[in-house]
Image (tube, rainbow, N blue to C red; front, side, top):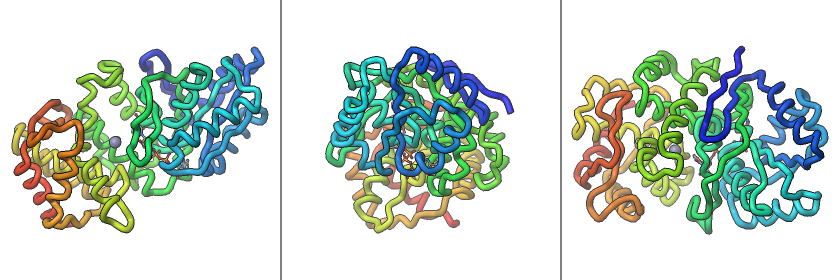
Length: 361
Ligand SMILES: NC(=O)c1ccc[n+]([C@@H]2O[C@H](COP(=O)([O-])OP(=O)(O)OC[C@H]3O[C@@H](n4cnc5c(N)ncnc54)[C@H](O)[C@@H]3O)[C@@H](O)[C@H]2O)c1
Ligand SMILES: [Zn+2]
């Protein structure tokens, strides 16, 4: 299988199950100059992914492993302090390099810890979840949470390089795979009808060759990042499905015993925001039906109670991206074409939630 190389903003992304040779030669430069190499993992990426790197690349036997637990809670200042101290205790200096091996929590945390350690050391990402491969590990945003507010402290910074090894998805639980798949669907909808047609010829369960899916999806995210690296406008296209999605994420955390994950709320957000696109931006009805059908064939239906619509809308009102009674959306004019900065009023949001609620499984 071939290796794909994508040029990002100042670094390259290598994709393939045979990128081990490329990783080896990249790391040898550091080893050669005696620089200390640290690898940040969580419990699962250490268990499932690190052994594969170790058996393919001898140099991995000599790196210093930093392990943290798994979960959003690790994106904290306390974990950063732990990592900084561990690096100091183990002869880390300005020339050291940190390899972030894990999902989006690891690339966010490790990217932040590296970029602030000794005024910034180099780091590279080896993402191990689908979400990190197609989204979190690329794009140059890193950060940690403050109390319970996500991504409050962070910066724009770029890795030296990103290596994506699709076979790492073999051990990823299905629910985590779906979390990334919602972003894959989003990427197709906002940018590329051809990719959408290709993607929708299979459901998630039928996909055996993830490399092709990942190649496309990264290509699309990277396109928007290159156009707007510091997220000042155009990159908002990537918010499609997320205005309602984010509100539902908070709502579900507050109200459900087993809250929906990010991908599951984005899937609902995609349906609601496609409905709004149909009402406001002339998204053809046939395309709305296609989207509803495809998302529905990959994600379970979630029971939304009408009595709770106001709770969800209240959460949206507190989102800093929205103004008083008008909410800022990215919408579709057709599959593959999107518009940013679309004002949507409360009634339309309510109507879209009602539309979702009315869908049969
Ligand atoms: N910086 C950005 O642009 C950006 C974009 C999107 C999301 N994010 C961030 O990404 C984070 C979510 O990332 P995530 O969904 O990857 O979550 P995660 O890093 O928590 O990983 C999900 C779970 O999968 C496990 N895991 C990882 N790789 C595995 C493998 N190969 N096999 C088995 N288990 C494995 C992890 O241990 C964890 O339990 C959030 O904190 C979010 O804010 C950042
Ligand atoms: Zn997202």
